[in-house]
Length: 57
Length: 551
Ligand code: HEM
Ligand code: HEM
Image (cartoon, rainbow over all chains, first blue to last red; front, side):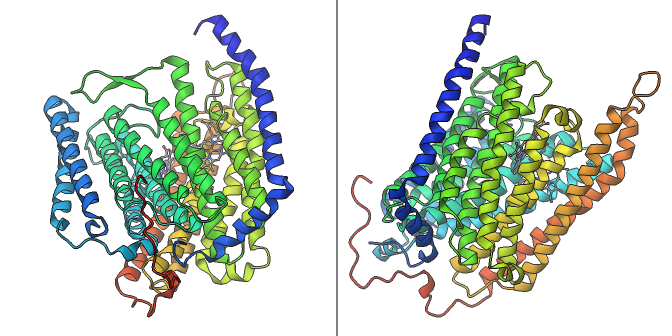
């Protein structure tokens, strides 16, 4: 790789890479703590406790 | 096996086997002056064995439609058995290699039995053979249970299992005859790599098709981990193995990358192999089998989600911590260190989530060796990730790199975490899948547990001591400014630790053999539970066909 290409890559990593990770973190936290999702999550975590009865129709 | 497939599926399976055999003939002919010719013959043999196997069962009665009302468990059973066989083989080779390091004469003068060829047999056999088959088997189990859906067909699970093991056999036999592309954990050459891509894509599609049939609205978090494992491993495998073979008849190929880029791609692959092969899928097991065995839902489902995204997105960036003090630009190394430190958070979220789930059920952990395997796995997971984040710091790495400290870290992870969670999962699964009330001998599960614990501790402590001693000896200067110890001095200092490690490994191996025996005897002798309601669906009304056209 030549010099400028390397510099460009560094610049992208240091700016957009950072923003993308921050945006991602916000997205994940929002999804996780979204009040509407609480019911699904509770259901999912309890649902596996009783799953040996075979596939549902 | 064949009797579980419909006639159409048998025909397709036959076609695949014949195609595999034909590929084998082509490779054997084109590479008759090259080691690849031997592999051509091996592939031909695999294809013929498949063909024979299918023809033998071809006219068996087709599976009854009632099959669609239960989960498809046969490939899971086979996967467990194959995984245990790989464990025995690859741990034996690991221990042999360990004794070789203490007593080099144990090579017995064969070219094939040199350290350089046996060591990758250990690593490939144990990670991909033992770990990979365990991952495939448990993922088949978990994807169906958590989706409340049967796998969409009977052929692709068998294809994934058989094809994957063909890859493992090609890899391991290749090292014996000197075929390797010399990239750690990616040693197999181009033709085996291409085959793995085909198998892996089938696996991914199979997973997605099962999820698409799910009756449970939310996809349980274990599946996320397994999907990340499959998807990222596909990506890593393809990019890291981009190479040009010399010719169709040659096993040798050359990487498309060169120099420091090649090194970076390799360790981007290498560390993510740790992250997605040895961590993500195994966390999928932890998040399912631990709550099931403890009969308590996971402590915090939200924590598991945050942990998932943390692990997925931080791990991708840490590969450069394998290349400290190299030609790799400094900022890339620093990036690796930073992300390695941040990685501790999602890692400990997972370990803490598992342990908090057990809070209030410690008496179960005390009484039940199966649950204890899983608990210990979570503890070692916490330990290995803490150690890893520490090792990633540049000055620490300058002491640990090239020493047995790395080997201690590796086996704290692989013995303490990966193997323990697999054994816990298998002891949970075997009685359930073979419809037995319990394991053949609960006492032997205890024996296995204590052998595994003792082996892990002896192994890891021996290597910690050895590694730090080595590191310090290599950097001790005398008054005149030259090194105080020669390399051979450090080698002599290692000798007792190498014996201790080989002994610890032997304990671990004996434990595995005890486990294999117990599993075998459970399959063979404990009488079947009467009225196996455990695995039967409660469905009074006649079922409509689950298999729809176009699926
Ligand atoms: C019976 C138990 C085991 C024994 C005796 C054993 C022994 C060894 C030995 C002697 C080495 C070479 C170390 C060196 O080059 O100095 C090694 C490397 C390795 N083993 Fe094991 N091993 C065992 C179990 C496992 C398991 C269960 C796994 C994975 C699931 C594993 C994964 C690895 C890996 C990844 C390496 C390469 C480490 C590196 O490159 O730093 N081992 N093992
Ligand atoms: C937060 C998590 C982790 C971090 C930051 C981490 C970091 C590291 C570092 C810095 C090294 C040494 C690199 C070198 O000096 O060459 C290393 C090696 C290694 N780690 Fe980890 N580790 C983590 C977790 C794990 C786990 C859970 C496992 C296994 C299950 C594991 C398996 C390995 C292996 C196999 C190697 C040897 C690679 C080689 O062949 O050189 N690591 N890790």
